[in-house]
Image 1 (tube, rainbow, N blue to C red):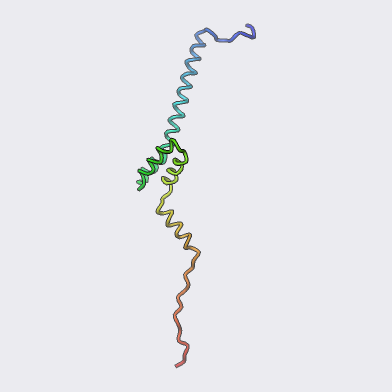
Image 2: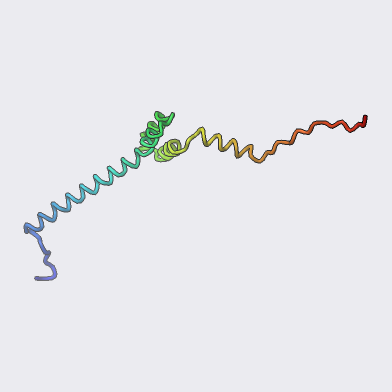
Length: 112
């Protein structure tokens, strides 16, 4: 065997290895595509399990997210964050540092 000869060339093993490599390539591309699809559909599944009020908006943002990826991030945020609870929490934080002044009733200091 010389240094310039290629092993397995023009043999049955060469054909088998080429077919195996093609199958592995197709399987890998399919697995990546399915994984991408599953991750991309994550906001819709989360919103449907929570009976989210904005399921239509999340679905539309998810589909638009195929073109503009930042829109998909917005769909994830809307799906995973409970808007009403977040607004209540922000309101409580905003008003939390204010301590209401105690109500002082006027006292009658005059002696009778």
